[in-house]
Image (cartoon, rainbow, N blue to C red; front, side):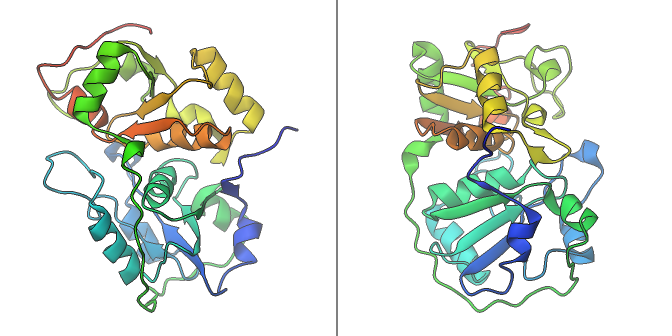
Length: 283
């Protein structure tokens, strides 16, 4: 069996490190309306012992008019500090089903300066299924200092995305489902156009895992090859609102690809404007 991502950890690995100094766990559960799940409510009902909750809608730049935009480094650092998390900690991020919303917070932590960050394989659903401990007590961690070291080049702005589309200087990997990418299905946000950016390749986020477990490196590499993504060239990841694009980022980084960035506005921004070029059909 081929190697697994160095950024993915097992429930056993996490369970063996709970309560250690400098070890932090974050519940990053977030869902689309179609999932009919509430991450904050589920956290209150039970979570990994010591885990703090990361509300992806609240811990965001709310001035952009777009969903859960990347916050300013100073705001992000202050919120992490309130949760007892330092950039020097070993940090594990998880969500409910596994590889869905957790990679977004993994990516945020990485680009804000945290160096030792992982995603829990199988998510909280898998954690419970294996019989690991669950608590309902909301922890009150000691405040910590998170010193940000923001990697701005890992975030693609709208203006930069326009240039990428016009020049083709970077490959574009879109994590939305094929129906939305090809404009066969409508976008979940009313009034938004379907389709994709010129030159984009479709790599649906759901294909990167099975039963909440991240695919092996060989499987990931084959997925990129099949989609027409050259791993020796730069890549910009995108999705509906910037969350599941980070799953592609996690896969790229797992394969040693570091020349990548995430289009934070994603389709919410591109498809929500009337001055952007859109292509329909297969890539």
